[in-house]
Image 1 (cartoon, helix red, strand yellow):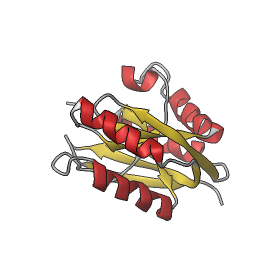
Image 2 (cartoon, helix red, strand yellow; image 1 turned 30 degrees about the vertical axis):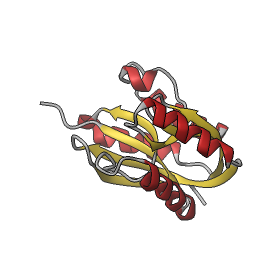
Image 3 (cartoon, helix red, strand yellow; image 1 turned 90 degrees about the vertical axis):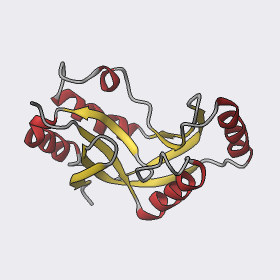
Length: 168
């Protein structure tokens, strides 16, 4: 039996993380909201290879911290996400992905579109209304990326197993 998959997420500065989590608490259906707001870098790294995953994350985080730009909103069909952009984030993810070439699942291998889901599991019409409402007041902003966290998937909730910060 294999170990539960590992999820890697980007760590953002505390103020930005709190702001994103407040949006998620406001708009995500409370009965479905089991997690804090997050930026998923990988959905299912091999859980049985935890030491290798941690080594890859550690190596990828040997770089200066950087800013991530929140550039807009995106429809998820039944939800809404904030779109993130940062070439440095793409590079960190690519470095980790290279360590698992040929072993990534379909979702992780198909490309990376960084975002924070602020609402999901909504009726499509409600999701479209929320997207229009959030777009009406949206202004781009930036947040500082701090590092990468690794979590074990527990069938819904996650258990954080490691946190690796970028170099100062």
